Image (cartoon, rainbow over all chains, first blue to last red; front, side, top):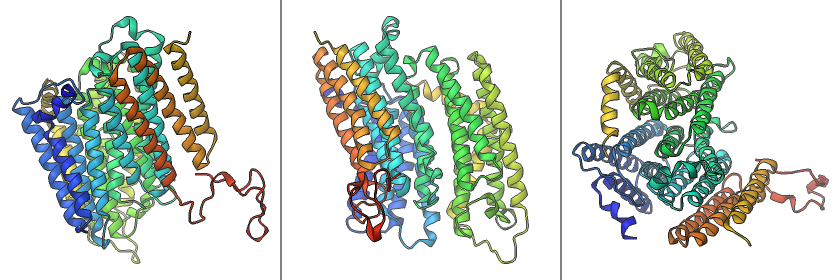
Length: 468
Length: 114
């Protein structure tokens, strides 16, 4: 018990404790009916503090690997930065989308923080228990964030995923005799090749890939597309793939060449299929977001499969680029929702460029980034990813992936055509919420910045990921 | 002699049955049974291996798996349209009775899908 609780004293775990404490605080304050805006600002501030603390602790060399339930190192600090940035943007978007709503559910902010906490536990997991608990926390909280009509499907999918992970880790436990992920990852080759371990790895891989697919459940909601809080759906669409990447990456030493091959195939097919869904002429705004998110999850799979050759920097850079682009698109949805109505298809964004040129420019930049245009972050990430896939001798995976990436150009073409059309006289765009516009502009600025200094960014990521 | 391998095989069979139930059925409580089978399969294998290795860490992990299964089942029951307000009736317990205004409720009819 002492060994398991030991790492809780490590300074690098302070960000997790800050977020957990804030979650409990918001839940307690909800009993006294605190205003939702206060909860949003508290949530936002705590995540900024947690991200800054994670960075300070790692840069100052206070991070250390501690074998127990949790461990903290450079990789967990990078994931902390990512998850806290997503959570901050979600809280900010909540402020924007709540302008026309008299009151929002304070509990949703606590749930969002709890989802971030669960994702951090997965990123810092050093034991089967912490991995399973972290995944369960993420799944339970995201089930509540996706909206009532999708909650049950989401829970079932996530339940299957957690059960697969639990049985997979149990079978690996049978093969290696330990529940610590470190020894599990470093088990001898002869054990890794036996049937029990192979079955366990298969279940584990299937269970951990599932969140990449279920991340699309938020925009997939057909009956009531935007019934839940937009910020919650945005959070789900980025936190679930991030959590899956953290878990798959942490377990990277146990994957054999066959497992990485499966991951590559899944990734390449996801890119092609996702972009195909997004560019269909009849695709609704929800389906466009669904397809783009699915395709981005595919790029994560390709980057994960290339970690042995390229290290973590390509994966983190791709996650960063994708996160900024999707953030900008979600900010647009929030603005459009306030401007006229919830956008049900691309045609609802007619006249956006003439009435909100900054917003339209920011989202166009991010779409170009998704389309792989250098020197934007998405373009540089795509180039790094292509190089990584080729260096891993899996160049054949580019056959479905490259056409998939190029398909985004069809979307960009339709987008530009709609955006600069003149708005019909019976329609009107209201002022956009400044918070959402700010989020879109920051995301677009980050896309340009990270693209121009792509190699410097990757070097910085590599140096931080190398912190033991 | 029954060895841990037999328990693991049994757990894999239970897991497969659970997956088949989840794919084939749509009623809420049957889905709960399906997900519980998945978790119980993991629990069975974990218990057998814990006993084999004489490892208390495995026993703690088994408690966590029990809790995860309970939480998942609870959310599946609670989530979605309510069953208490009449908007959903699972398992069609009144299949042998005529419905309101003479609506037939024969076997296979009025099944509630997600």
